Length: 187
Image (cartoon, rainbow, N blue to C red; front, side, top):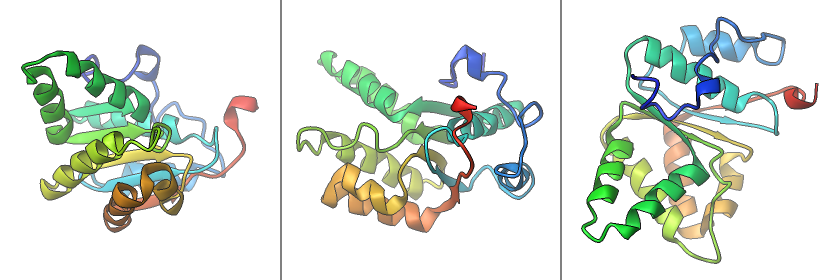
């Protein structure tokens, strides 16, 4: 049941550190995440396409689920779409429920942050993202991000106003891990 509410896709249920392909590009990162990282610590995994950011985040998610810790994982674009889908409920109840879950789950994983970003000059999404991050920070709830962008590049994707505020929070909260290596999808 925990897997079904985690947000992971069925093919991601088996992604874990035990069956991961370990090489020189990821061995130190995997060792740290299994032995030196605590589940209340914020993470920002970033790097080029195909370096294992999403796989690593899924390994973390499954490790936490195995420990009985509640997680919710979503790609940034999917999370934005989920929130937008609640707008048709004029009572606002669906949006409140979803936002409560996202803001209060023990560990939130947002994959591919910066992909949705600023749309047509609209501050809608960066404002929502800021609200989620700020409340999770205040409540001491861990959040994990994956991105193709460094934190300084993220400002360009989320806009000067909210992007700068998000960057500031993530710089102070996150252990930043640059994922290295070749594009594993093309090997």
